[in-house]
Image (cartoon, rainbow, N blue to C red; front, side):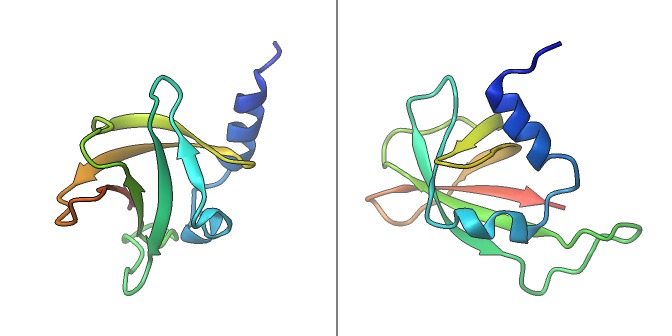
Length: 110
């Protein structure tokens, strides 16, 4: 069976549990979501003071993305294609954004 190119990139990225350092090279890059016209920029990675969940070795972390104001990517599980990079699968939610010039989103890994 032949896998599409995007799956090759995703499968390579998903062989091990994702860690916050897996996203560090993509900080500031644009992520695209097939099936949506929206593109979101990864603006921060929060891994400070998060301890691993008992019985696991992965440190919890969260990602914050920014997108355009007034146009919302609905909450859900998406394949996210990084510009010039891999494809990641994750659950993303729009979050309260006090700034009027953008919409923020959060992805949490426990």
